[in-house]
Length: 426
Image (cartoon, helix red, strand yellow):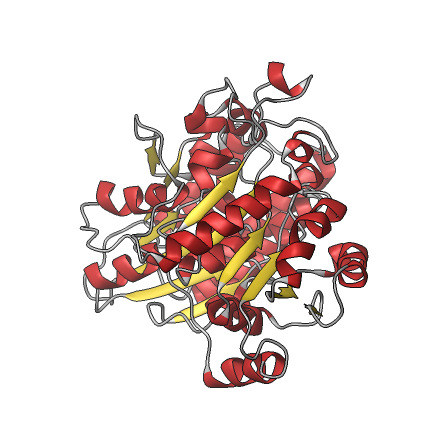
């Protein structure tokens, strides 16, 4: 394709220039590339082509799960469009069975990559996968700070319109993503009220003039995934309540101490509940400690062993989720599995909840949930404004939640579910 070759040549020339000058200037880069996109027809309306949408979500499991309803509603509004979803390689297995998109691609980038390397990788990716499509619209639903250069990829995709949230929605994003608004053709501010991340994705569709009829999340796995999950569980949790436990978290200060989980869940195990541990290899040691410390036969430790969609199938087969703020928690919410979450954010956090409250932005969506939080932030966290409230690099404020509170929450959830009430517990 001549257009793709020409674009790659222009991009490569700029990258070579940045290597020589050791300088990457965003306005200069946009000014250098935009005329080429227009000249080659990428920014023009062409009604002879099939309408096409590009959706970029390069963060983790939780962010992608919270966007699944967005994909369904996009497809409902545009049933004949071609829809491409690009995600982080780690998340691709969870998304590749999505029935609402025509293709799922993965693109790896991050804060540890040199900018020239990200540029080269993005240009190669666009030449190989995106420039042939001449996308009409690129949606970038991530609201918070973006450490994966999502908007750069959206700009380089050649999409006629690029729609996403402003770099000025928070001080952190303005500092980390300075100048990224230049990559967008339509820049959205936040809704005035406190908004969950699921709803923020829908806001992009509504701003574009589409209707949202169903705001639920969903996930997908196939028969083979379900069969593997069943084989793992059939001789373990037969005739017992099954709880999925997640000991990990993206940040260490969001990890509840494993010894406190043991203290809380040991009496629940003695009463007959079985626990399956899910997560990545980063919590191997915590998982081994938990399994050794619990009553014999009460724990199935699958940390680092289960394929992502098999994990989803196990979550869907479970009776309750108990754990930290993780992607697995949002899997549970997608399947309407009840949740008991232990969170670092204190109840008396004073910072703006629309920006800094992980509780308001990421609480378990549309499922029965009890979120346990410390009553008060510990110093120095009571004087800071950071996402989730706790500013340390270790379990800190979260440790103020007692094991007894987890036991009480579990008993309350069981009673609540036995009474057959609705979904809200918060």
